[in-house]
Image 1 (cartoon, rainbow, N blue to C red):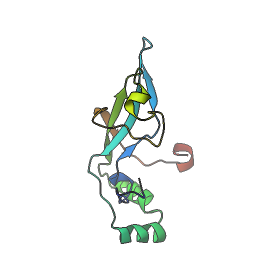
Image 2: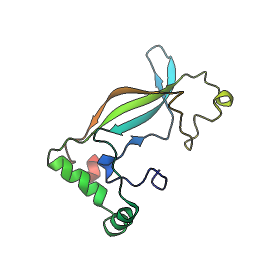
Image 3: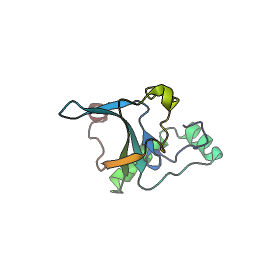
Length: 134
């Protein structure tokens, strides 16, 4: 997405995120569905201009990490609304027109709408970066 018409986000806290992989949610009865995760930035998306993206990417490659760290240190709200797309296991790739397990494919939101299930809040920076993040 970075090299697409979506543009280059102004830091990690100003971008939506999603999982390219398909996951399986299984309930206690063994019934399952396939899902894809989506995290929508609560403050919306903001993109650099093309010139700004070249400048920050070349002159300040740590901009996104530092911007996120400083926002958390200042106590700013850094959050995303968590969603999933849900697909029943009997979905047929031939009828869908795509392989739902192919990481290069995006599930159409008209067929598989987003379902909100929570929030992701970042409110504390790691004390030991290697232990807590890596």
